[in-house]
Amino acid sequence: MSTRITMLKERAEAESKTAREVAQKAADEGREMTDDERHTYETSMKSLTEVLDGIKAVKADEAVMAQAKEFADSVGVAEKADIKARVKSLGLTVVDSPEFKSLLAGFPEGRVPSKSRVQSSPISVKSLFTGASSTSAGAFVINERADIVEMLGRKPLTIRSLVSNRRTTSDTVEFVAETSHTNNAAVVAEATSSAGQTATAGNGGAVTFANVSGGGYKPEGAWAFEVKTAVVKTIAEWVPVTKRALADVAQLEGLINQELQNDIVEAEEDQILNGDGQGENFTGITATSGIQTQAWATDLFTTIRKGVTKARTVGRVNPTALVLNPADAERIDLAQDGNGRYYYGGPQALGQRTIWGVPVVESESQATGTGLLGDFSKAVVWDREQTTVTMTDSHADFFIRNLVAVLAEERLAFGVTRPTAFVSLDLTA
Image 1 (spheres, one colour):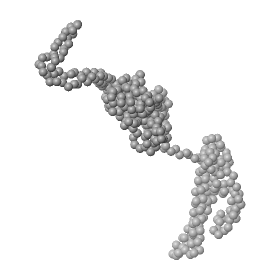
Image 2 (tube, helix red, strand yellow):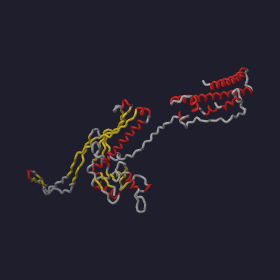
Image 3 (cartoon, helix red, strand yellow):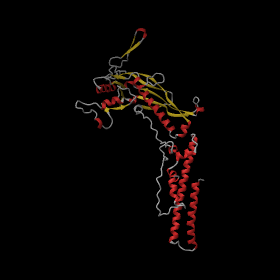
Image 4 (tube, one colour):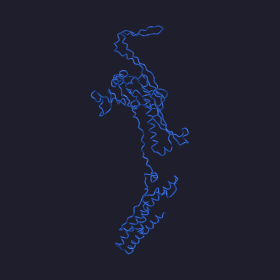
């Protein structure tokens, strides 16, 4: 126990004894305390409170000094004088000063009467214990780590919500697509003869049949079909993380899971639009054989309108969306007439943006200078396994390095059931 605390405790015991004796005397005599006794009692109790507060302050100062010494020892600073100089608080600086001791010398009992006038000489404080310095209290400041982790942000994903979404339990999906259609439907007159068809033998023994005039025969249409196959592919990504990070940062696992899943979905959107069909890539819409094309014609709006015509007259669909890169969508928003008026309402425009009645959808996965118009229900995603996240330390030497591989993957197939339902637009003059 330090000498200062010992002295304060002795003073506290003296003040406590004085207060007890005054109160006990009045109690033993069965009376209330006199005015002088009450004044003595209250003065002693007030002094006792001040002394106890002083003991708490000294203990706190000594605890700081002990922490400072421990810190200094850990970095090789061992001399007590140096430690005390570095971490002495403002309170300790004052009570240890010659000026303060000279002030108390006029009061041998260590008590300053309540009505006494006191004034010390100026006390010089050369070095204040401050949290702003790493060599002072700042050495004990622990930074608070907020629970905010600000990621870089992501592009909006829009294409998956446009196409048809189905599920499959197989690794290969087959669908039937019509390749040609000849419409021979016609008005048929009532039969006037009961005679059947006539047979004619041709070269090589082939036999052909001809309808008899007035037989009332119905015309035969010509339809052709083919079976198409969409193979389930895997989109995956993994990242390494330490076990300590997973254990110490409660939200890190969730962040990894979410960010990995978002990476997968971004890759999925790009594959749906632009997959080239090579290797494990999807055959995306723009690479699908049979989709229509529309060359640049006069201006942006004329080109789009001609594409709408092709979708309706050849693809036999009403387009559900026009997918544009944000840069091309900006060209539409900023288009003005000869009087400087915006065609599409300008900054005050509200609601869904449309061109020729077709909703405009922005996607950064769509190449600049091109547009994709069509009925997107004619493109289908079959989910085999939706996005899952797994973790393991069995990868390479991760087990002995306390690392974990976090893997996200999904399995799905993609196909365009009617290629002519889509028109690729050239939006560059």
